[in-house]
Image 1: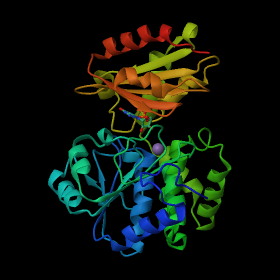
Image 2 (image 1 turned 180 degrees about the horizontal axis):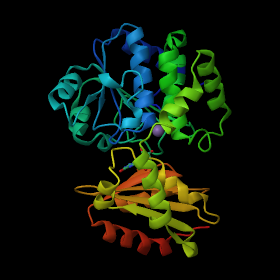
Image 3 (image 1 turned 45 degrees about the vertical axis):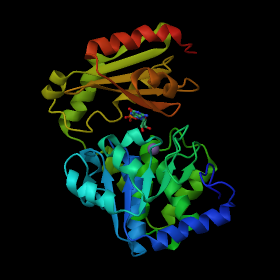
Length: 345
Ligand code: 5GP
Ligand code: MN
């Protein structure tokens, strides 16, 4: 199936482009795969899948993430090899400087790589973006963007089918791809209505992945205090605003400390209030040392990507994120004051 929906090299056929990309991969001496800040299951799954595949073709490959990924993704094969830019700046910079081929996975604008932005935009490497967020910025030589795709991980599989050798996608790469697809679709409950997604899943299952194991490693692997924190949020912190069909929850630094919060513990919390009848828009505010991180989710046609623009953020129609430098309470006040401007139906 064609994946070249939006290509930055004019006047070439898909076949020619596929050959150009295959040629670039063959001639590359040093490949870097980089994804977005606060990497999630799709960022890690898609990057590690491509990493394992390219290594099987004999390439020298590094995976760089702007900052640390959550503990619940540590089991993903290859995650120990990832160079965290925030922690190992010189190793990450060296890998990026030496790269003659770069893959940008699961993000659509260079600002999403945090402090690595200048290095990637200034690099002379051949750059390939593979992503499913709307409105990709033109900062790569080849842009492969399919906003209907469940996940970047799915696109990586289709990319390998188009330009590479899918026979080299083994159980390890397939596990990473499945983890990415599952993460970005809430276990195939949203963003997963394209038949193509299930064709890819069938191929992954044929390579022998254990899908129940992958589910369990991601969703049944948390600490006891994390589950208690969820209970606390739902019971004590959920605010429902029926007049706006909206609900939100928040966590302060003090509350995080009280529940021994570790990175990733609040993953997925934002979704819960969407199950309240009548609620179609939800937000989750989390206080960090120097900013408030916000997650937005919606059911149906309410565009969280547009709404996230009020908080320096973006994402997809039904899932977006943003940031605020205001205090936690002022951020929430700003959020509530914006709601009347939007038609939530
Ligand atoms: P989450 O709420 O899980 O952090 O993010 C949900 C979606 O929004 C993901 O697709 C993520 O890539 C995107 N996203 C999260 N935070 C930001 C942000 O600050 N800026 C932009 N442009 N996208 C974000
Ligand atoms: Mn994604």
